Amino acid sequence: MEISELTIGESYTCKSPLFNKEFTGIVEKIYDLSAMVTVNQCNSNDSEKADDLNGRLIVAARNITNLCKKPQEA
Image (tube, rainbow, N blue to C red):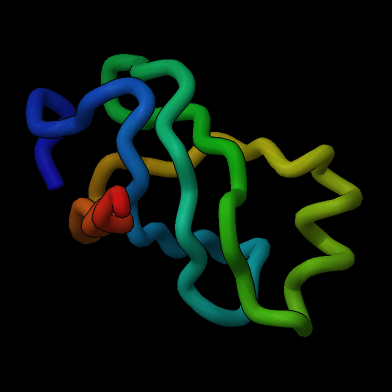
């Protein structure tokens, strides 16, 4: 995904070499070629790693794949 397509506060599907599976993260800050994301949802095998990172990590823009749909409000 292009860095210009990212929006702070939106949730995206991401992947990182630190995690075994893709995870959902919320963009907190956008850099030139990457973004700082807060892990929102991840595989149970990766939850300990997410805790070790305090739930935050830098992800390259090329590893952010798509915008996750927001849950519909009742």
